[in-house]
Image (cartoon, rainbow, N blue to C red):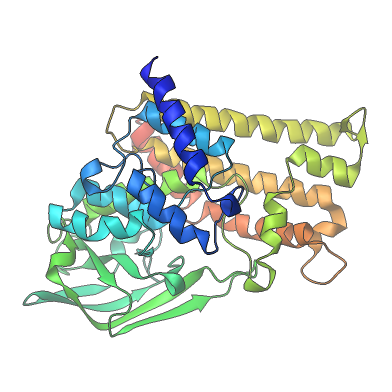
Length: 397
């Protein structure tokens, strides 16, 4: 028996024996069985399968990870952990952190015990991130941090933050930045959610006033944070480009239950048949049929191109500048998909509350509004175009 077949049989048997029935088909798992699922997946190394075994990962090859993903999809098994710790901080710590930092922080990610948020953007430093002004001054074995971050996703629910701070105000702006980690329960941290047009409040302002952070939480060298920041942005863009198929961001608390209806509504074709009608098992409107087919074909081509890019990358090599290409395309593709969904729904796509609109319709309105942020978050589409022009196509400045 070939290794791939043997490994598939092993994974299939393990998943069938260990996946709680209550979590099948749960895109965002919750409930009492989630802790059990996280413990089992973490112990088996399947929570973060590509990470080294010595830090709690599975140490799996790319081929083995694809088999694991195939079998999890077959059983409709959700990931046990997700978020910034898995997709962004973990890979950066593995590349730039020291052994003590990895052993301290990675288990909390793998078992879902610690959630993370990202302290990058500031009121005066968005697309020009290197202009950030949050200060960190060394005081013995600690840094004292003062400043403000904005558009900090999920800060109100996070435990820790990975944060860019200025440690040398006299150096050129890219050279005086450091990358630090600290507990959001530290004295001097204030978090204020920012309501969005979609009805969500997933972004926050975070204020730091004389926050004391142990110097051991500096990742890499002092004033060497810009290199780490750029690497993390590549991981972020990869994460965002993989999560835009159905929109990103949770709806307002009052309609959180509507999200399940949104995610289970089926394909664009199914939605079109429901609202426009079908003829001979096809969407009745020929023009709409063409529009739906184009969006679905574009999404298929995108997924295949993304997979081909991942498979052609050298073993152990993280995301490169092509992450900007995927992030740009995913942003525009998701906005187009949500626009078409609202067009299909017609007046039912304008629902916000009340019994005149069902849960799917209310969630669709919010997802449509939320999708407008795709071309801003993680670096604007204009920034991605600049990266693609310079780093992918090699065009002159």
